[in-house]
Amino acid sequence: MTKYAPSWLQLREDADAAARATELIEPVRAFLRGTDEVVIRDLGCGTGSLGRWLARRLPGRQRWILHDRDPDLLTHALARTSRPEHALDGGEVTVVTEQRDITELSAEDLAGTSLVAASALLDLLTAEEMSRLAEACVEAKCAVLFTLSVSGRVVLSPKEKFDIEISDAFNAHQRRVTNGRWLLGPDAVDVAFGVFERLGATVRRAPSPWRLGADQAALTAEWLAGWVGAACEQRPELAHDGDAYLRWRLAQCAAGELNATIQHEDLLVVPS
Image (cartoon, rainbow, N blue to C red):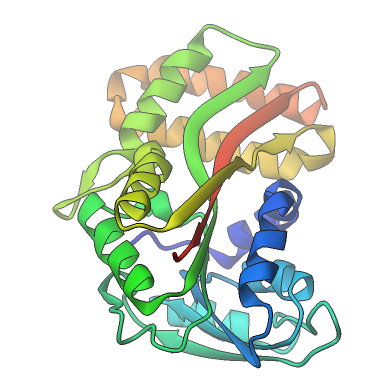
């Protein structure tokens, strides 16, 4: 799985919070209503930003189990200043961590879990891994909230015809084969939706776009460099024009003249 720097995760936290589909939260509350202690597993937790956002939107006593393969990120997420402070109704929130490969979770591992949650994770999975995870969640009868999955659609303003070539190459990079794993990339939400429906669960999806403007120049610049860099890695013949394109876009960003909408989707699954 991809390793992310805490600085990148911290930089994107506010944009993530603004983008998440809040209309999916009330159905989560309804599913959890009456539960003495809500047990939430955050898969690929990073620095714990999803917990900081979601815990205060859900009522009741909560126990968060943070999963990640990166021990440094788990240490960061467990720090006192990183943990969620309280639930919606002031209920206690406790946090523990588990370092493990989340693609190997089974229904037995998820026993007693109320909600499986993740942020920006699905596009890093393969179809087989997605199917295994979905089967485990449905068998364990827990709700699922997957947020901020890349959809492959980017709109920049002002537009430029080279945007499409970069976007197509980036999406191909997201679907690449790495270490024998064929990543779902921007197909992830469609695949997950279909798998959960076939398993008999109730599934909802909602858009959760980043909308970046002059106030998010630092994040936009970092995202741009990664977006163009991945595209040129996938298609090296784009590198020459890609370098000039990136310099031009970064200059627009620094001048406050660039706006970007990066589409994501959120997915909510409730067991039948």
